[in-house]
Length: 252
Ligand code: SAH
Image 1 (cartoon, helix red, strand yellow):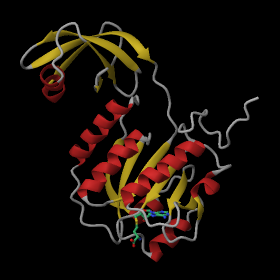
Image 2 (cartoon, rainbow, N blue to C red; image 1 turned 45 degrees about the vertical axis):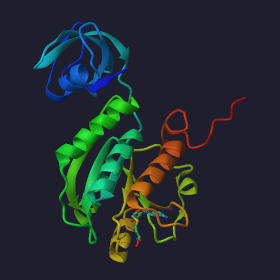
Image 3 (cartoon, rainbow, N blue to C red; image 1 turned 60 degrees about the vertical axis):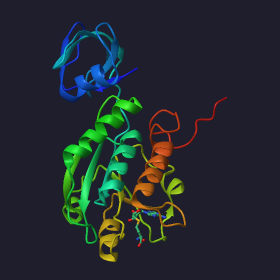
Image 4 (cartoon, rainbow, N blue to C red; image 1 turned 45 degrees about the horizontal axis):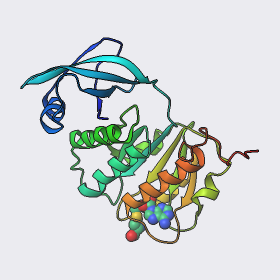
């Protein structure tokens, strides 16, 4: 079933006009036509079944029929990631979206390359990943800011899982067990790693829990996948447990 993210309110019997890429994708690429069903979601009103009522050259029109899934809240985990090269950054956006982050904050650090990010392109990657993986919203990608500014503005309510490759941190699962379900942020550094000054600045936040992802140095995109998989499985919705339960419930 094709799912599309739209930015219009969704309610019963509503008209949803599609133009440009989305219409082209449905009509030309997927070769759908009048009467075919798709699913629509907009990040607020849940997921709706909709039918194509008009399919033209320049666009098409859908009519929403029924709510297929109510909007549900997901664990509150955001990714704070240092800028890396284009291909791994696109991988990071796609995988972090699949792994349920609610937003992605890009960071400039001592060792990041100059910021050539194309936020439009990253937003399109996030949207496509959200449509594919079945989530009901699309994570926002925030433009790069300096690590120091980010730390200075840190919201004390948000715990920080600091993925520290220096090797002197507790294993991630052990470090997270028993911690509260959120809100959380996962922090991943650049290809060149964090400087020792940056590491101590990050560790100086009361909200910080340093974690190790094992004895090998992972590439940033691998580290994002590993860290978010651990976080979701221990504190999020990755283990199929209700959000926030750090230990498997004893099933009698
Ligand atoms: N400093 C390394 C490269 C850093 S890898 C080098 O000099 O080659 C990029 C980021 O991934 C790191 O900053 C860290 O956030 C994360 N990372 C990689 N391996 C990790 C590990 N074993 N434990 C914790 N974090 C890790």
